[in-house]
Amino acid sequence: MNTKPLKPILSILFLGCLFLNANAQKLPNVQTSSVRAPVNIKIDGKATEWDNKFQAYNHATDVFYTVSNDDSKLYLTIQAADKLVINKIMSGGITFTIQKSGKKTDKDGISITYPLFDKKNKPFLPQSLGKQGAEISIVGDAGGHASDTKEPQDESMMNTYNKSLNASKYIGVTGIKTLDSLISAYNTDGIRVAQLFDNTMRYTYELAIDLKLLGLQAIDASKFAYHISINPFVPDIKPNDAAAPVKPGGGFLSLVMVDDGMSGSGATTDMWGEYTLAKAVKKDTLVN
Image (cartoon, rainbow, N blue to C red; front, side):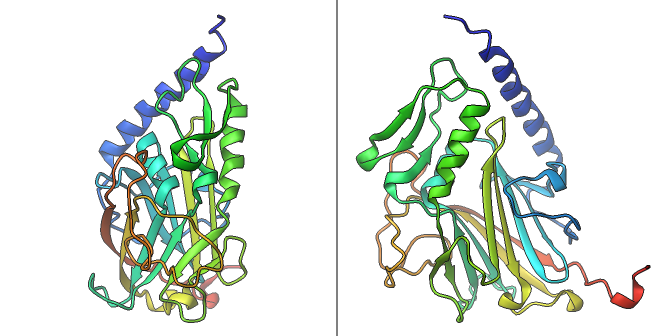
């Protein structure tokens, strides 16, 4: 068998891991500063406007992340490289909770959960990914493979996985009275999301929330506590399931949480931090 086409890809994956490990050692565990979002920020699942550099690497959740804002929106950008962590995100999603009071026990927190997949369309990265003969899999019922595609591990592999991400069509919401507990991922309500794999199979998640939905203002340099959790398995999601609101920390209030046997852990991994909004730029101070 000819393995030459695989060698450059394996080299890229190896060098990417070395870079991520070195970078992680230099970053704080929790972000420590306010960050003004780039003027050219786009919610497209790519961290190119950040030059793939992040404010923190959290060891509890094993992800790189940056919280930032501009005058009208709050942003969360997350990147994961470990397959077990990525599979856990695919299985249960990421819940981002904002506590305006700054208290962890605040029952009035606002939570956003994404991505949300049902069992039939949930992407899964096998541990053999990047090795000769590895398969691209979308998980089916009872842990079976709904489809297995033996494709060359090049750009076609990335495209196949990115296409599978389109199956996540809903966002879980709690704490915003004007919104339902499940809204479309393509909504016009002030919450934007995106996710993509890059050519080294790093997974990037992006979230943007209108500050007015959170009751925050950049001009006041508001301070709040935030909670990021990587959730365990979430049962099937149905858009008309009004009895299944998402709760902070992941999961659904009316459903029992169980591990799917593939997420790497049946428990939620999470972290807390505090963030002060980067103050709004006054129009009269801008230079024409």
